[in-house]
Image (cartoon, rainbow, N blue to C red; front, side):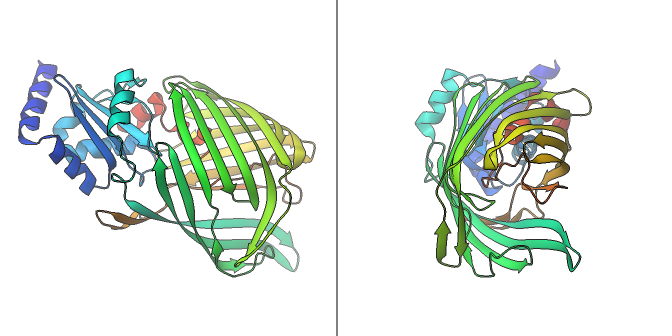
Length: 375
């Protein structure tokens, strides 16, 4: 009787609000590329929401925007997107994960409109690099504010660029001139269910430029995932409009395996291979997920030495600052920072590419984690 009642409420609800009205409601709330597939016995809602770090919060927010009747409706399916790519389907009410069906993929391919259905989103985020220095200057820090944007060019293909505004720097000789932020072409895809690809070409953090490729096998209803990453990079430096670079000859290639332990939503991740600067070795991460943040401890041993440290990631307050129909200003959905006690030689170092690594991204789409946050 309960399920029949929920279905009846949903049908009654849909009589008063058609698919176009649903899209408008979600669009006004900040959702982008909203697609509504209202079949005879189900309602499929595809969307992207860039303000939240957790897709669970996006799905919960969608149900609240559309009405509390949606929260327990079993014949509603949410299909969140990331960088214009559907990730999977989650049943309303139970939030059980299901892989994308051929029908889901066909519907998205036929209705996806990258130029029309996205806002021009500007994102504010800090860049902080720090280490313990010498007696005369015990704490060396570089602090910049980055204003960047992502422009979608085609399905899964985007251009990220922006400006870096220096605030303070007693760490290196980067200077205090305005300069371009890390800028790159980025391609993200899930060509086959559970198989994810990320390809970036351009300038990155850690003063690197070049090519970066990631592949990850991750069933989003499984505790195990496996990844490969590799690339070739070189050193570059911007002084205002002055540009300097060295040959692109630093090759890195690593493999990793990650296991969700089932204990308090912690994961163990073991990475091995050749890191930046031809540094061969292994790294072990212990990662704990929270609703508003992610905390991790790590230890590494390589040819360059032994080190340990911690990292954290969270969304910056307040999120939305200004939002119009075609433009938005917000803070970043993920600020990630890592500290290592060995600050002289780079040990087991990988550069940041301006967006989450696949392992960090897919961890938040895991069925067990989404059920923890919603139920």
